[in-house]
Length: 306
Length: 315
Image 1 (cartoon, rainbow over the protein chains, first blue to last red):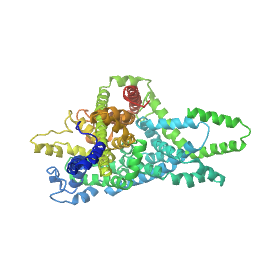
Image 2: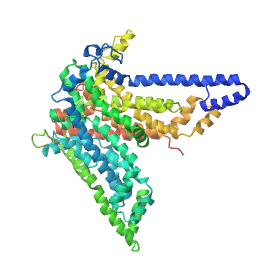
Image 3: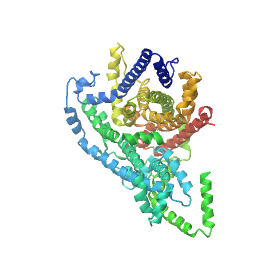
Image 4: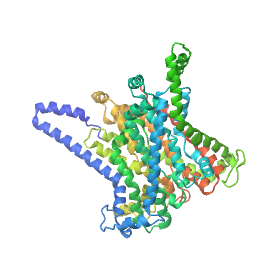
């Protein structure tokens, strides 16, 4: 953060003017630019390493025998032990794949629910004129801000009455009913940007609302749908609070809830298998991150989601 | 304004006899809206509004799930004021919010500015810095944290290189909360991406003009970047305060569900969970939830009020 150097754009023009006068001085200036950029990259790489070091260490340690995990700062194991994965997989009452599958089922249904019902609600708010639209829209916006904690107790009572505790319904049904208002809002913003002419042309050709929605709006809204899908996946996969409350029976537990059981059962002796299963639960998120990076970055930048 | 215009437009068209075709269209719109909004309406009433009302009612009752609720009025709200564990929970949560949120935003802004200098490989660095944000809220990372800052965790291994003898950071009441604050700061990736997008909106010519006037880099940051970015900083601040106040997973996992050692990581939501779902004090938990809504609204209101003094919306 030097205060005496001029900004790089200014430096650029100075270099070109200097270049005309004295070639050797220009080379010195260019050198200074290169050094600065090298220094900057070295700093950034160092910062990046510090940031991902815990993740890499977790990955490395999942291949180390438990006895040496605590002795080694190094990411690459000096002694490889693949048995952490097989032990960890079988360590709980059910094989770990069972919990992963439970998570997958909830995520898949949530995805379906959010994509279908949130986009439907968004279409109505963005493209249809009906009585009280603004009032309902305002209510929808308020529900985005509502903390789940103020609803969870009555929801628990309600779902208990209908015998849904220890089923996936309390986690899936809200998504099938478009209660993730944030995504409704996200898609409203998107639908509003689609030109009216397209819709009018379709109407003249005799298209009703279902067809306009399915054939025009949804195909054009692919980026918004992708953003919704990615964030639904990540948030549902990482969700812990609701799953912890609604799923207490062992065979119904999801991957994060099951993973926490290692802390109860192990009393610290089986870090290796626990780290291995931690990696297993992180892999789906990492894959989504790799595939959907573009939409993730865009989604955050334009809407400011968490 | 637009809402008002829209309403006026609707009324005028309903009254006008010449717009028969359009009126029919409106009617079709109304019917279609009912269909498209059907799931949302159902969710609004069954999953949100009804429980919201029930929660308000429960907060005035003594209810343990097994016997029917008995009405006790505002007794629990009075009790909230005398509950020392609740005071502790508030202290812990507010400490976390007041330190973690600004620290995270400062780091996010700093790295966004470094990344915004048009350096090569920017997208790569951005991804790497963003990755922890995606995983920071997961149980896996909370478990990792518990190990990293344990007595014989790798953080102490690292300190040992410099001959410093560390302590059990997560088992010491003075430091446990700070490990969770650090975890929050570590997930600075998403505000960083929002800042990056904001920084790109600032026209380069402002900086050129400033540097022609002889403004130093620091001066440029204070007089150009900060004011122009302040609405985005404000937005991030409001959102992060709201979500940070509701933090749960990290505290639950790091403390093994207890909020310990000696309640030093007893986050508000964790205490609410214990009261509601371990002790089955559903009435008390509901009262706590409503107090939480009031506090979050209060914090947001304070943020908006303070924004008058530092957020710059152009002229």
